[in-house]
Length: 81
Image 1 (cartoon, rainbow, N blue to C red):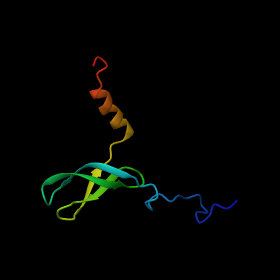
Image 2 (spheres, helix red, strand yellow):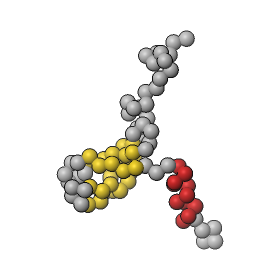
Image 3 (spheres, one colour):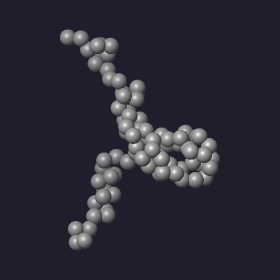
Image 4 (cartoon, rainbow, N blue to C red):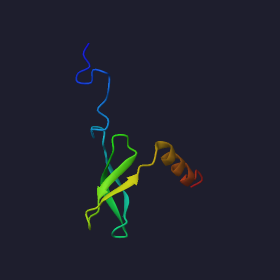
């Protein structure tokens, strides 16, 4: 059985193959402004990057984990409403 070019069972992670679109608030330290931008995550969905619309600097934001998102949702959830 052939595993293709990854004969050792390796993966394509790191190549951008698993990157996804991600919209978030990005802060530009050069412009000292925050922008809601459409960016792209890394393959591991840990960091998202976008380009500042004013100075073109590459901006980064940490992508929250599923556990962090769940905790934020539950903290805001009020079953009595």
